[in-house]
Image (cartoon, rainbow over all chains, first blue to last red; front, side, top):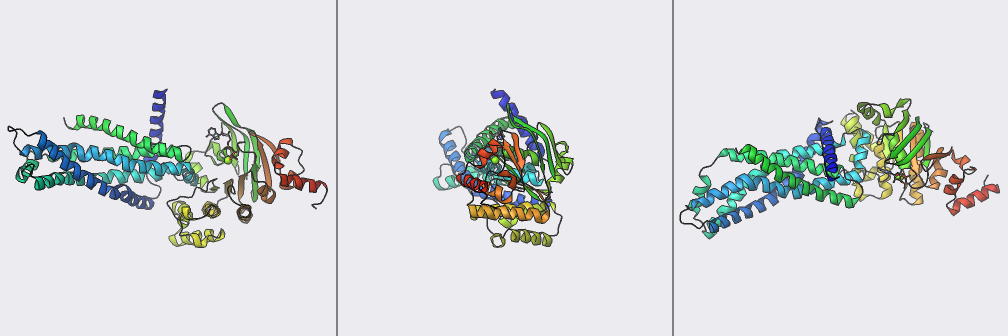
Length: 249
Length: 256
Ligand SMILES: Nc1ncnc2c1ncn2[C@@H]1O[C@H](COP(=O)(O)OP(=O)(O)OP(=O)(O)O)[C@@H](O)[C@H]1O
Ligand SMILES: [Mg+2]
């Protein structure tokens, strides 16, 4: 029964995505909506990304410094390890999980409300491909802007660490600076960005799916947006594992 | 003209529409009446193609919508306007933008022409001054009127209204009813209206189809309605005390 439901949902998701993945009926309209979505999903998330990245970056350095208090390990290891954590996992995967909460619930409740108030039926009745019209700008908007957020998160995360070192001397600033520059592989940044684009796609499409098939009233829209966040978080974690195995070998 | 022939529609085990036959005429307001849950909305959604009937034909001037390909349905939809039960205005757009939207998507007009057409439609429903407001900032009656303006912006041949005056006061209801009726006659549209409001029925019932438990129980116009012998229909009409009195007066030939 649970399995049958699961496959039914997957089928509905594929059907919806087939409607989404077509060319917009009006390109001019699409670009306007695209800019709106970049603003709403991307630019409006900048502050949360800045704040969280800065603090987590700082905490990572403090934790590593306290737990690696070993005479055999050079102090610059702290800078090196925290850079790897921030670049490889934090800025893409954890940031995406946070965005799933903020952006995913926004997408699901917006589209869900349009469904239960018959706005989607109204679009369909005019002859508009509602899935394409509503979902594609969000999908493209989030997937193209999420790299900006990821890079910002990397920079702020490392800056957070630097900030702690500067003010507490838990690690000497010079050691930290040496650490964050050593053994640097530019591929890791690309790896992180590619992962995040994939996560952005998951957040936008899965959340849109829950909204698009919402049924009933405001209660169901609420449920849809909770389910959207839970499901996109789970899928992000699973695909993180898969992508890490595929790309890091 | 729209003809529905032998429409059957079930959800799971339940048959909601059971062999409905009806003709909806152009230039007239065709009313579908019946008790709550009788299947009016389901019938309307079948007519416009949001649901697909299990069997039967729905002919738009002879063309069967149930047999059309998706592309053809899309073209037909540009001739269809619909007023939803809850207005269904796009709440991220102003009233003006709501009416402008279908033109922008489908009309191929120049921007100036589209603005002119939008202003004309808003004027037609007396909402010229509310164009800049959002749906959340206007009253229920204004929302219905804005939805009518949006529905007629592309000059549809067919207009569908699902309970156009539910949730409105009697006076506003009459304004909406008459607006729909006038537009229908003016543009010779085929208009189909769902309602269980007896005032509307007596006001604009050019043609009436009574649905009861998924079957067509009666068919006629507002003048024939009062004389009907159909028991279920009479139960429906005379549920209100007022209409009992009207009927009594009519029997005594006071109304003539
Ligand atoms: N999508 C659906 N799935 C299953 N059953 C449905 C669905 N839509 C409607 N029904 C059922 O069909 C019946 C008729 O519903 P419908 O909405 O057409 O009534 P209505 O005549 O429009 O009533 P109202 O005047 O209250 O709007 C109801 O019993 C309803 O439960
Ligand atoms: Mg109804």
